[in-house]
Image (cartoon, rainbow, N blue to C red):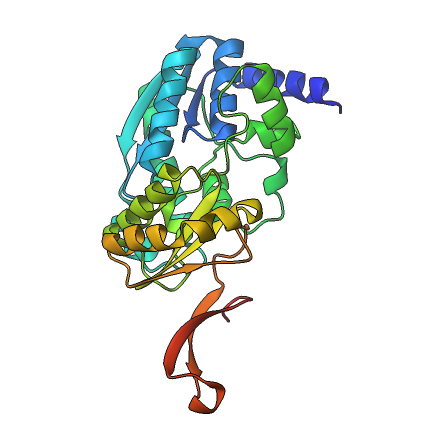
Length: 290
């Protein structure tokens, strides 16, 4: 199918469902899905629901609310308590399963209360084959994925979003704050706060796409490769402000921002006196733990 056919297929899927409750984060996919749902079904048959918790970035919340106001998307907020779940806090590789189980259970209850026929997520065709425990939870709880069913890929959703005038069309990916904490290091409200505050520092300095990876007492900063030079120029100021948040050390990753670096391991390297060293420094061991 070409792009127009996929769009018409999406409309047909929504029309078949009739009324929908959408998991709405304010990201590219959920904003697009909510806008198309309102255009196709009318606002009386759509409710976008945002789950608020310590793992949800405040900046993302602002974008979500901006789009709600601008495009007339019916909206509701609900507190989710995944951070208090020991299975989630343990931060194993299936962490997202417990987060999404919490979210989709609550949205299922809301859908029943508002008499909406289906709960929808924003999974797209690029998500197939990736390690996504959250999708397992969605399937178990009967959540529909109309973007995926229509065969729409991320780049196509961005193109269609631009056509619809959505400000999120070129927005960088914005997963939850817990995605900055490597598996095995427990997720706590304090660590989530430290990540969020450190990323606000980078945003104030004008960086657009970045991550601050939390490695206990060490923060690893990733920016786009073309912005590494700018980060080096500002390294002293960045280090000073990020350490003020609570980190003891700050590392600038010279490979730059990349997806899939979650479990790269920061290890202490002992430098011998024979090689000019006088103690421990820090280095990056690429690859995945285990």
